[in-house]
View 1 (cartoon, rainbow, N blue to C red):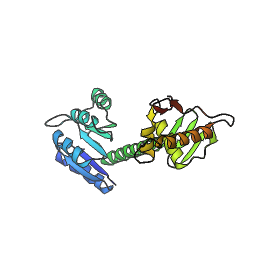
View 2 (view 1 turned 180 degrees about the vertical axis):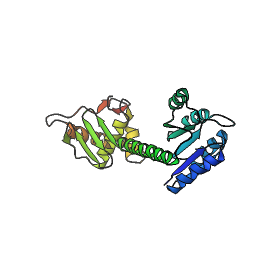
View 3 (view 1 turned 90 degrees about the vertical axis):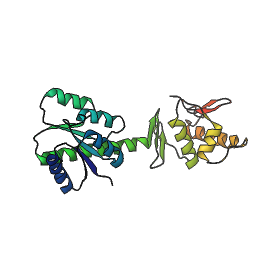
Length: 231
């Protein structure tokens, strides 16, 4: 598991002290002493967090932060000897997650690092979980457990039916052709009679999603084109 932390500070003694405390907590540490070196190491090493000094010889830490935020979302903590609120506001506005004035207690810095990583890990776990769940217009699908309910009624779907419904919901508002459905779900080349296979599975889905007296119109047919689910 990657646990690399980038420390950017042109004062080597400070950088080494920070690195010592972080390594004692089990983190890998990459040191950089200029902004350009830090940006190279971000790309090469993929850190999980960065500590950036503001005052640097080549470019300031805010400029480094801006470049990082163009491509990366990992936590960034700014370090600075300046105490003006405007600097703090600038850093937070540009995407910093925390701000520690110098001089600082190394133990407090380590605690702040751990807090940011806990938050970031929890957020990413939630995002990953949300990506595997669809909750839309009374339909709830869980890709991890393969469970599906519609208007609070459990739907017992075959794996193919589940995958068709998931694909349509993931592209709601767009028409998905029978050819696209067949080739993405069955992973086979589409032929003319493949359309019958798709139609049968769509019909079964509509019957299962109906209220017992009629077929559901949750899945729309776009004649001569394919199928879609409205936004």
